[in-house]
Every structure is written in structure tokens, then in C-alpha cells.
Image 1 (tube, one colour):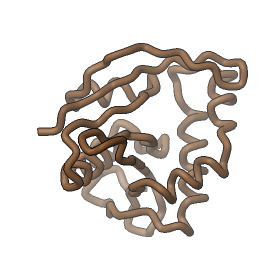
Image 2 (spheres, one colour; image 1 turned 180 degrees about the vertical axis):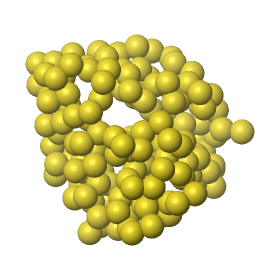
Image 3 (cartoon, one colour; image 1 turned 45 degrees about the vertical axis):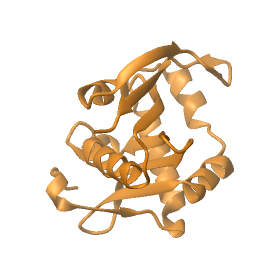
Image 4 (cartoon, one colour; image 1 turned 90 degrees about the horizontal axis):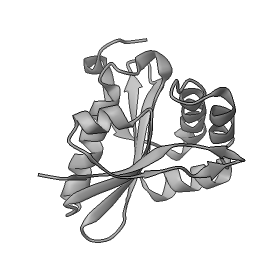
Length: 162
């Protein structure tokens, strides 16, 4: 696998790539070091049909290495005229902390601005929060939703787009 963002192609996800995208999400979740095994299993047991639908209805993009293998994805939607909701951000575990997530966020934020949005909001996992904080997002509220009898700490975060 490539180790640099310069080796990647960033583009919209195609419907035939959605299943691969969900496998990437599951792999990333199961590797999330900020959660214990039971929490990861609960989170990774997401409703595939729901997530496939979200990928198809939202602005969904991927990072692909030179052989066309999906290594990261981002998906967002318009919440209202001013606010974009960042729904999914996942990077394959071997390439985490190597710039792929930042590049995906750059693309999503720029696209949101082109659609007239002035702010991005998201509910961020403990795994994603450090990256978002580095990128200028602020933490507005800590949350702890229960998923399949497991509490999953996360945070509501937002960023004003410049």
C-alpha cells in the first residue's frame, strides 16, 4: 500500500464501491484503539442497508491508491442552507495518521463550501476527535450514545468554514 497521499486519487464513490466502503468502515472500527472490544463489536455491527443508503444519498468520496483499491472514505450531507453534516470518515488502519483523513476532510469541506455551507458539524468518535481538533473543529458537547448495550463516547464538533 502507498504511504503518501500523493500516491492517491480522490473521487466520488461509485455505487459498485459501496460494499467495499462498508468493509473498510468495519475494519477501521474494529481497529479503533480508543474503544474496548465489546464497544468495537457493537459499533461494527451497524445496519449495512442503512449505511449503504446513506452512502448513496449523501456526498460520498473515496481515496484510492494507484491500483484502484479504496483506502479511505468521507460522506456528508446538507443539514440546512448553512450547515453540512459530516457523517462518515474512515481510513484503512495501515494508512491512518498518514494524511489520508486530512485529504478526505479537505475535499469534503471544499465541496461543502461550493454548495454554500459556512459550517460543518459532526458527531466524532474518540478516534476521530484528535484529527478534527488539529483541523480547527471545536468540541461543543460530549455524548455517550448506547449502541447494542455498549456506551460509545463521542463528541458533537463543529467548524466554521473560511
